[in-house]
Length: 448
Image: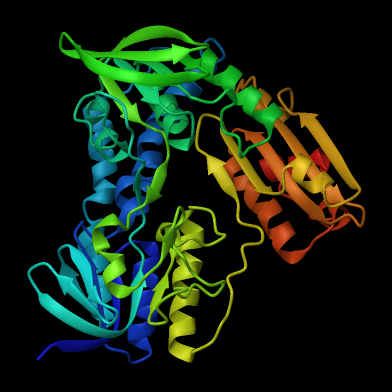
């Protein structure tokens, strides 16, 4: 007889784990399944391990900026040792995640999953399971690339597990992954090139601040090639020869390693969604504003696997998972609030935004815009940092509509603006905040 569960969660990342725990604690029978180690992209193959490696790059960059200003001697990255530092965080994650789920009463399963009917799923090694509800939270995977030799690229997971760092690295694509990894690799001594198909990089961020980032990237030794369309990758000795077109002309670059940084897509291909009557679109599972499948009411989706308005960010996956769980439990139609979700490119320094871009804000009516080059401020001077800036956008009534900042530790600073947008605070209210001095937050008054 086929087992029946109240909820089966597919994907043991942040969205799935939070939803599974919430429903189990409410008394539901819940199982979670993943064919990969528990923890998801952020904890194991993305955000967290990336920042562990970035710590070494930050230390090297800080020492180089202050060379001759009180810091002496060579500082370099020992890549294998830095990788072990990263593994000190990532290695315990799967077991810790599973233990937390088990303590919450969730059954933990391993293996590939696929739907066999609108209310049934087959799990490799476990057989068939019937369910009242299912949550698809399988995250995203690298976008398939269609040119000869594309199989020679490694993805972000592979990069974060490199035993040794090659000397020459090319990144295909000009988004988050390429820039963040390029900044790490360059500080570790690699010759780095970013090949971006577009004329402008990091389009979701303020263009003036992106220009500052590009200048800082080039100063760190990163070569950025815009308008570069990959044509093919082939063997060249022990490395690779990348052929790309630029302005209609073929060009080539040799690299020891070529990394996929050309975007990600929902990881739902292997689930046989048609068997359950689940409709999909370019952004993943088609869902209502309350995260329920538009074609199968038993199914919900959250995080990168859902075609929701939310950005592909960990905080979004977390609260979408919780809201999907709440809607399943209570039979409600609560919609996620995406207001004030910040986004950061963890380069060195980091580029951050929350809210609207200036061009978006101007479409809403009259706005006030304050752009400040903060490169010469004390917060940068003490580090000998050369590039930093801020653009703050507010409505006529003073409420913050958007904040865009580039500088050291500005990833922390963006959270103040995130809170301001979430709570509808005005410029005057933020100015009234007594910040500790001297800190980055004490600079906010002068940015407004």
